[in-house]
Length: 244
Length: 244
Image (cartoon, rainbow over all chains, first blue to last red; front, top):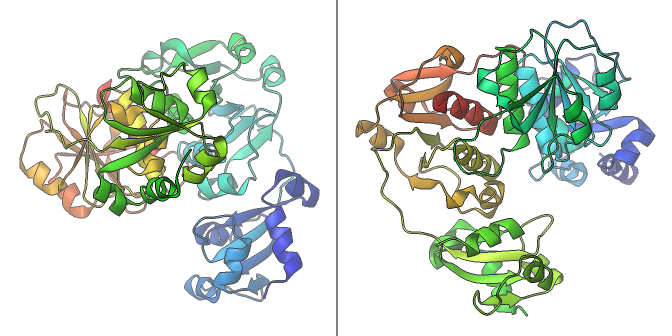
């Protein structure tokens, strides 16, 4: 059973101001909820159908599951095609970046689309990129579409909302690279073993100020005629080049 | 002005059966409609606001524009955030594949998400991949979300809905490569100058039958922990490797 208050509470978490107010976010999807149950993340509430509980052999008491019908799930879901489980998860306290890491970190300047951000998180996780720095104007990591598109990878990548120019000025990275339209061919570039790779906004790319602060400007060479690449695709190609 | 009949006609084109029945599809977005007007595609109708006409200096008479209000655009739009112009475009007759092309072609086995397909089309266009073969179960190219995500690249890439195993059996390509989870490292692979690269379904990858018919199985090596890559990101990385 789910009360009216619970419905409006879960729905309110679709908005960032309520996520900040209550300090929690919504994670939807059977696989993600199972991963959450097996993680050390603070899961505050779970709404799940009997189908989910039986399929994944979930201990209802131990995990404090609120058993609901599919119709009730639909009432609180932010998805077009709701699944069978929704978790309300505590937003973790900000970690401290690891500047001694031996791998590359990503920085995202003003990414606006939650699906793109989620896909970038998933890609970073695939390539072993463990840290993502987000400019203050980026879409929120805890947006439910971002969480959904990350396919559980938000559990394994660390995020830092930060002022990117201040971050660069700290000179903590061996190399600061930036993806632009007129840089050197990324496929002919040899990268340092670690550094910070900056990818920018869907329409405008990386801001001029940040570009001017980078050590290295790289470009994915265009052979055909498309005006631009989708930013998640571009980030994927960039990640494949910096880690190999 | 837009009539009730026109509203229901345009809305019906969100469904494939009506696209097939009427032989046309919807293309939304200011840039896409401008590109269409400058192309040799058969545009049957255009609904646009005065803002669009003034901004892009469109000749209303010559282009037979139906001037509508933003509210009317919203009534016929399939987008969450409608723009100022919607075109009804004739589905072109199927072209004949060019097997003498000097570049690689893509084949998509059972891609289901229209946004993914559109992003793959856009990426193919960036990398100069001019032909995409789609298995019979792929989402429709003329789905309005696909058209939207392709950002105009559907105008420059040729599509062929086909039986992929029959296509492979014709032995028209120098090399048939397939993206799988257990193939050789794509970054250490030298490709022929041209060939067919097959990428598969979001959840299940390329079907076993098609895999068994390929000359070469390649993999984007996983360094981190994500279970998989988004298919459009994977296709982007694959394209970057076959064309360079």
